[in-house]
Amino acid sequence: MRRRGLVLPPLTPEVVDDLLAVFPKGAVVGNPVDATAAVGEEQLADCLDRLMRHPGIDAVLVVLVPTAVAAATGDDLVRALTDAPGHRAKPIAVVRLEQDLPVKLLPAADGGTIPSYAEPQAAARALSHAARREAWLARPVETVPDLDGIDAARAQEVVETFLTRHPDGGWLDPRTCADLLACYGISQIPWAWAETEDDAVLAAQRLRGPDGRVVMKAHWPGLVHKSEQRAVHLDLQGDAQVRAAFRDFETRFAGLLTGVVVQPLAPRGTELFAGVVQDEVFGPLVLFGLGGTATEVLGDHAARLAPLTVHDVHALITAPRCAPLLFGAHGSGPADLEGLEQLLLRLSRMAADLPQLAEVDFNPVLATAEGVSVLDARVRLPGRPGLCLSCGWMSYWTACSGRWRRCGRRTTASTHCWTRCSRSVPIWSWRWCCSASWSPPSVWSTRSTARSACWVRKARSSSSSPSASTRRPSRGSVTTRAARASWGC
Image 1 (spheres, rainbow, N blue to C red):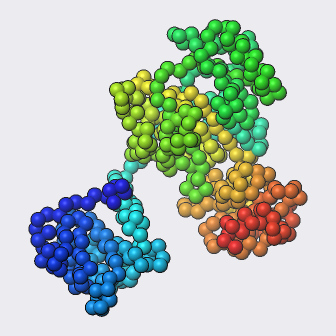
Image 2 (image 1 turned 135 degrees about the vertical axis):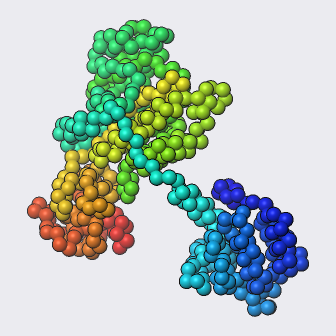
Image 3 (image 1 turned 45 degrees about the horizontal axis):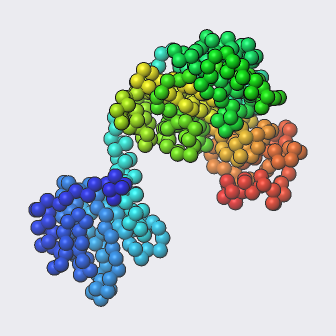
């Protein structure tokens, strides 16, 4: 129970004496209470009534074990929970170890139900979720804070320009990524782009810090994990080392390299991760946690729905296990928490403004007492949007491996259009607003290209796509099995 965040308060002497007067001899009244196998139906009901009146108790969990005594006397201890009045003034759950299903709902006399679990761990987990939800509902209503220095129109222009040049989408190059981040006031460590050896030397001379050291990172379209590709050179001093690093990249990445990024060597600090991913149901999620090369291995991340409120940002910063590092653990001094809050709020605003964003990855984000800056930023956009044939809004898709993607605009206050893509090749298909029920998957749209098709359920009122042929794919095809799995066929 304690591992789930639930507190077992000690019972007051008055409550202990009150329960001992009810229970049979041999009962142990503490928290938990051991009523023994001799407890009867009326005794258990009386005990629950008294516990419900205790102001220091918020919920009661009853564990019932079948005994020979209850079978001999004919007592049904479950009736003590469901029939007695007043037992539902506070939450109550029951554990029955002989239960065949993990969870059952027991009908109560007042018309409600009492949840019954087969395992105590499941019951404790459910009560913990209920307690957290109650605390969340009790929070005051908050609004998304206003941010200065936001240029959403310019950001949209940057995205549209990139998609015009790259209709299939992809990762933004460093300069385009910097332009997008500048629209939201997200600060990066100073850097320069260089395409030749001489340009790299000039950039290093301009960006060297007090220690005279710089960092060089290779770049080419599609490069995601620089460390795994050994595409980073650290601690470069002097023009000779800069030239050697550039030549090394040219030799190892011949035919791929398009340029390098030169940065000053960052000071010591806490390496963090911040990013955005698109959830197929809830939309953009803002992630935060421990960064660096081991971020995916350790998985110390937390997530909140965008757009973030001030309370969401505070909860996001304190949720990861690495949070004590930000508050001065081990005498390192606290990080710039206000700057970190601003970074997450601006990242959240960018995710809310640009539904085209498929993925944003800031890793690492360096947090020190002096400030917060992004050392490496990556942004991925999906393919060029296509027109939704049902509602007229734009719907986006990517190489989503069969995941759902939401339209960029709402059709009403609470409905969206949804498309399902099994591959990254955008083709004509039927799209339909989800404000009505789904129709059977009776019509399919395909292209002759092998293993590239977009499958969507067809609306009853929608007409055929002008460029789609209507045939049913083979029963054993990969796309058919994926579509069947999503529709529950």
